[in-house]
Length: 405
Image 1 (cartoon, rainbow, N blue to C red):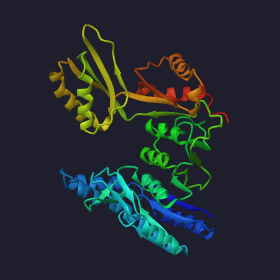
Image 2: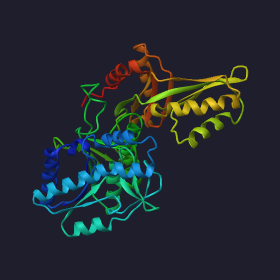
Image 3: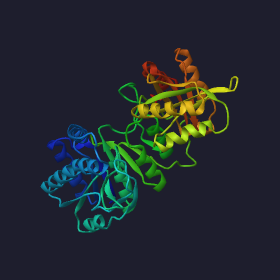
């Protein structure tokens, strides 16, 4: 007997057949004695369809109205799933984010959870009913509907699991778990039976698309056990938990890649205190997440600063930094969109030297040039040409023996 939060992504409830399949699965869990709370995303690509509708009627797109529009997708899905669960013979009630007790800040389109008050969810469970919660939404301190952003349903599920003291949070997707690399690029990629929060957090930060990075951060902070598994095969997936101190860790657990970033370079920057602070404070005020940063050695009092930003933020960043060039006395700013990041990740890297050397040697043997490097205690990332990144992933996966059981 367990108390579970089960989150189902858009493809898992993409059509009536899929909704009925999910309802049958939920009903089986309830009949086996489990307490089940469901969190559901919008059906299929409905969120994208709603965004296109918004583009068709307005260029203004006020944040308050966008949140009201986008969260309609989850409300539709939760009502339909509730009907299907009823049809499967189990009573169920649908709840919006506000009804489920999600209080957020006032930041529209990317709100943050401040508090979860799950009184109505607990009451439904006590009555033997299945609460079905619309994901990625809440109500702000100004009493407005808010949207948690892309991937927010994962965060909803994890936050709700923490709030009700669930035994685990099951994140159902269209894949069977977390793999040692993207199986579309590396057919020999292996599903991991277990991974630590820290490892998965590094993976999601460097290109692994599921689950969302925010949800993993929340799970790690509040020690919510995650189970990433398939809504199509229902087989055991990947458990995400805290590291066991006395357990031997794999030196490298996975290779990830990310094509979502672009590189910017500010050339001829005067090498004096405060210049970098001025640039990156301006970018922070623009709410842009800067990743890798490299500053060249000063030559005759000037240097170059390179850094990466998300592709979809590049134009805004170029406009901002372009205005700063004259103020800083720099020579100019340029960008490169033809780059990609490849990373190796593993908890065992903390106590095993030589991973970076092996990575660099593998890329060198292929003639792949490394443009930028960043590291953490359990990750090494290299920026390479985008048209060589798949080759790099395949080679590194083989070099570290990740296909071997």
